[in-house]
Length: 409
Image (tube, rainbow, N blue to C red; front, side, top):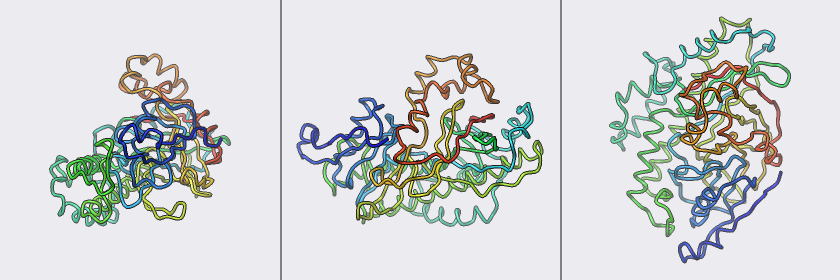
């Protein structure tokens, strides 16, 4: 489905700031609430936005910037638009197994995954990652800390914690799943980011941007949209730190996948991994070329969907997920949605639903069904089928996955 709605921020700019500028907001859905639209209008007023703001079908109100937005900027980056879960994303691999080869009872597999991969705030008792992974990260991190020693005070037992958290899940909507595709082939899929240190880096630079309040590009309609201008020391330092966190998140998913495969092998027939594997960010910033300009593209809850690029769009626990191939749509800045997208807050979901509701909506899936994860109930999310229908111009479906086991933080 093509763009469903275009809002011209110029119409509101005079009322909001008397400066009379703003770029269009191109939205790939009609399912968007008024608060998210107002948040998007503030972004679209910024003078350094390139061409337009693109909005994915899973759009909803976010902290700092709207989840499901793609924000191209020239000569500036907004740290709060990237957010604090820097590099959060997905990893999926296909196993050489058929669903019939899975045991009828998956409880022992889930238990062993949870033993191998710490969840929530937990971390490994000893460092699990190889020195070849840690050493390059450590060297780059030391350079960052030398310039911003305040980061070290934000994380307890700093050096041990970031290393011991490599290969851990976290909480919230992060998960590890065993899934079955349309041909009954088995997949492992997981979702996580840059853990505690990534959160510290995001928080630190968001506050630094607010404190410095750079005004090279004029008025900022919301302090959460405070930015670093290219050419400033803080801009260079943020780019260095955010790329470190994105690389850490990528390695975190790789390490977690290795541990998950170790946990499940004793329970399954011998298997080989398919070459069809995906590891992609959906909260990140990187330089790209669009509409003839080199720009910084911030994807806040969106994945890159360039021509023939593979990506992962998960639903909620209890619904379908998709392996997709990008179509390189220029109007979306070669992007698509990063999931189903929440339709209600966590607090509202906890008020409306019970563990019994969760059990009903996750029937047949080996997973937690207690009050601690009620906020992740499928009914708290948008209809993933409708989200996918709204982005047929952005991606094509390669595989449809249905989970049979889900580990939550």
